[in-house]
Image (tube, rainbow, N blue to C red):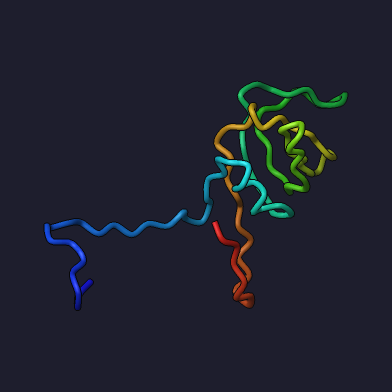
Length: 107
């Protein structure tokens, strides 16, 4: 942009990044972070096996996506949970940064 200006009028160039906790909004976003740690809330508390109480806050490893059932499989300390995507809100990928690795997920 310093050598050759592609725009005739003035403009503001903005550069942004998804940050260290990128939002997961589409099924493609979820697919790109399978086997990674994610955190989200559900729109309503979901039932848990006894003696646990229903919960709305979730954090664990995304293991699988069921496209036909439109749900995700999350694994945490309490087991495996199939959660309907339509109930997921505010989902983020919790990046595990390995300074020795040069491989990054594309988002």
